[in-house]
Length: 249
Image (cartoon, rainbow, N blue to C red; front, top):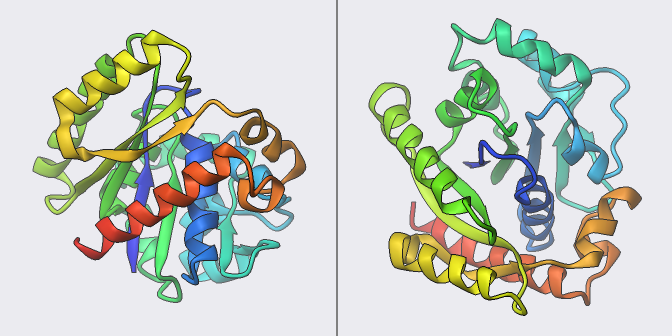
């Protein structure tokens, strides 16, 4: 089992879109995948059409022995969700002194090939738990101004996490999102990212795509909502790249 954290301290960068659609394509490839929604907004949960009734990751962190009963299946074979509920927002305070709570919880869930975690858009205790639990991180980088500065700050944080909490934590890769080939800015951000981070940047670039934006409102991943769209093609390629890099971990 490999645990992948999708992280960026900035909101609106395509983090949840990447978590949901990457998980969906990994499952479509025949892997058993669990998506863990660690963002109290619950967008990854609703984006897969899940409406948690009996609790979610907050309850699982409090009572790890109940984790299996809190996991929801989705309409896609092989893809399950440990959902977020609004009370997860309060967990940040409770987890300040428990950086390994999520890691200990996920180690109980041995039935999956890959666990994908959608981290909250912050560097608080919930995200620290994601860092401590993950084998590797995937960092979405939106093709917009100032984006690289945020990534530089995040990579410094990851280095501190390696020194203190999780020495084996890897950065699986950086994925350029919200790319608009018509804009010089998008091309410049991609070029700068590749110049600075080299092979850490995935070859796949995720375009701005209306269908990607529409899919969550229907509670579906892009591979079932608009499988012929450019967004679907991008996340299918990204899943293939991710699988290759995971095998090398």
